Length: 543
Ligand code: GLC
Image (cartoon, rainbow, N blue to C red; front, top):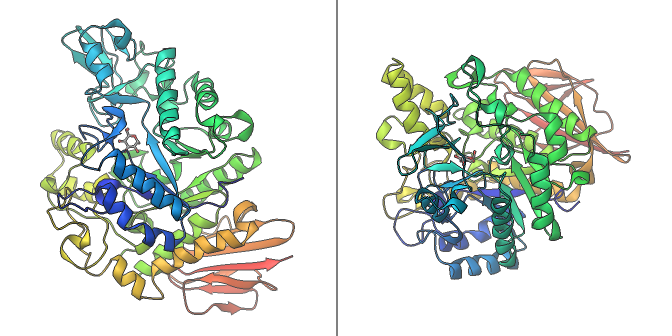
């Protein structure tokens, strides 16, 4: 399968590279950095949305699906990007936001004017239910001109599309086909398992937020199969990934199974809630390592048994930096970043690298609300304040959880604004950019960057990394994440200490060679291996 040997790199375009001095990243800026990405060895770039948008949710509120926000550039800039990517053998992945549009979209504006055709593109009710928006507050907003409420699972400027309407489904297929005609073959589908609503008329009992009525809804597989048949399914070069919110394994094995003709692979998030107290994002608790391991492993096995494919990731633009969350972003920054990378890249699936993780960027740790831009963060600040939390407590929570932690500008060098822009960036640069940046990483042969480069190269070299069976090892060990990957002719063992304390792994690796490590040597003691703080060793053997 052509996506099994690929590595995807995610660019948050607003924060990657500014070329025209307005403090916003842009397409020409991205073009100027393509050689860096080519050198890293990645195959596909996933771009967060760059379409016309009022930017209430940084582009996930699309007002025009076919044109670029001029702050990113023009269609000519995109054509140049496309050519430059092609020259370097890099594919482009676009982000399709089809659960909702911006309320500034022409369709919604016409709906508000009472045009029935467009009113039917959205979801309306005379009275709201008790459902909650994922960004806080009611999921229904009153529209005065119609004297009705429209559904918005996210911000009130993101109105949910009515997928029951075949015209909406056709519009979405047409948009994909438009981008295919422009040479884009890879697509990420935003919160795509929320598109089918079982009902919008019922209150959720026990004051739950309503997700049971729209998560993996009754027609979601049917809709995805239809979209596949009418658009990317006809493109032999297509690679697709769906973002699946609060989903189940039973659904994912269908979304990401070639037999079902839905998507190539899925992003799931269960493993990224292991530090949520009672699964509540805004309540902190130290992360549960055994739970992280159990979740990653059980999904690996479940997907594998069903022949379904996973997107592998610990970072993206909605998550705080994994290094700050599961690693140690000070004393053991290098070792722990490499450990997290090795685990991610060597499980069964397609790895995604989020910009900056390859140089060990950390959380932003902003100290004042004026530094935050993200709508979810600024909303929650007010909500938690109303609930009586002190500002100090709220800042602590945001420093751990805000999406802005990972959205800060890419750290290229020690120049002003980390080399991202000469102007004041739309979001402040993280304080540590003078030490943590691309220029420094390229100079240091032991850097996190070169470790990523090795991991990407190894995927191209070893069949076992691409397609080997995943077998968990040392499952009950409370400090080590270990697994084997194997084919009939190769075996790979990954051993990773997730803690600062030393430990040893009782496991024989006789006959194996060391393929990759994050310390200068490996301490083998008979049938056990000593693992230093955040040490990772990858063993290989052909059978
Ligand atoms: C997805 C995006 C996120 C956005 C949300 C609503 O989760 O990744 O950034 O806010 O969908 O579109």
